[in-house]
Length: 114
Image (cartoon, rainbow, N blue to C red; front, side):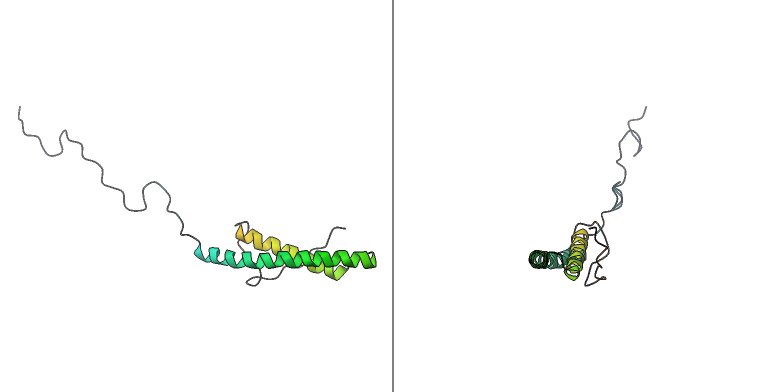
């Protein structure tokens, strides 16, 4: 028997490393920086829309106290603002991908349920 071994005989040689990005894990998508910046902008807009809606609700209560019925135009404006607020929050929370106003259309008030 010979004490000389061939280079691959009886020795463990590790497999070559996988190429970058092919380590069995799907590549991670890039961070949505543009969406993050839009979300900050929409968050500021949502804050103002929320307070405007609160103000219009108070005005509507005053109108109801004086006239004993709600003002339809004010109701429609408030409903549109509530829908817009939902669109802003839904975009920020990744519940929808369409950008709200001012980069998309302003929502119209849906028929209210009275």
